[in-house]
Image (cartoon, rainbow, N blue to C red; front, side, top):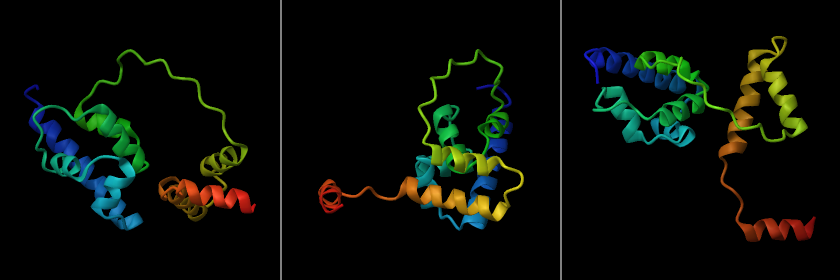
Length: 146
């Protein structure tokens, strides 16, 4: 680490604290819920908040944390002082998109759609994305009945 490590730790800790405060205030999420939705353990998030890390956080975890909270990872990278001008990785081709999902995504970026409606769309998507899967035997029973 460089001599700016303490400043980077403070900046990143501040970024994480703000993200957690926003998640609590706007979504009423607990620390456990943030951890569940981002895939980053509570222990890791707590270390980030305290600036208690010897080596830089893993980029994949930072990205997962940001994406789980609907934040731009570039803000976290800036707080960490990471250079984003490196060689770009080749992106894998996007998987085929369901037309209904595509319509929802268009509504989320449409400036004529109210923020309240966008909030409800996001919350519904989050609910569906993170709800427990039905056990296999229940799905088979539903298929036979339908």
